[in-house]
Length: 313
Image (tube, rainbow, N blue to C red):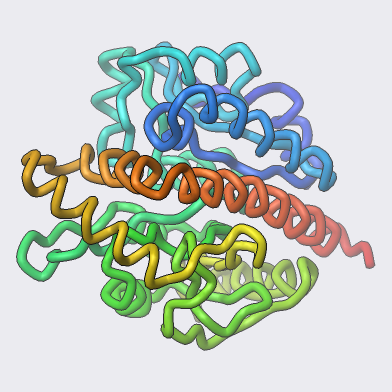
């Protein structure tokens, strides 16, 4: 395994003493955001983690290794290289064997973070059940990976282009704990409201950290689940978009994807690009804002979690 995973030295040192580290996915850099926003946002997310007192560990596949903690030069390369593979957890062995560069999805990032000893991941929105998945069975590997990996993921719910009610049901079926951060409602990514209730809530980073500690201890006792925790953080009031407006935009984008014959992993980036174009850039700006906000929140939770593990108040 040592030959497959490369952990940046400062991150390895922090993990060795229980320091706060936040894992960040790289698919958002290679496929999720257009240039130059992708590079700018990746660096802003790393800066937000550092400002909150934790170390950022952006993850990718490079030169036949799972790299935990990209350098700025490597982030620039991921942002500017046109043929970076979108790497889910099921793709990792093939990408490692081919030595092609791979940008990790939430699923792959969660898998790699857990193996490196990182307890918390930040992203914009997780994947989930696609619209029409009752016929296509198109459900993101993000959910199956979370169901078997005990890592906390901070996000703004699932991407709004998905079937959110079905995604929430699948999360419950898979035993993934969903916790609202200062909200009783599952966020709809660009929108604060979804009319989907969450059963559990925390209001401070320390409350979230305490929950993570209990979840970890239950797993060790064999009385709980090895599944992860989803901490859903709604977009800020100044960056939210009305749900009805977003749904109208999504309907047009989905129709365009069907007309163009877009399938598989190409669906999400195609729809996001359509939304950004048809909203005059509003969805893009909302996406960037929530990515940075979630990175900051994850870092504050990581700091509180590290303090709790060390027995500090």
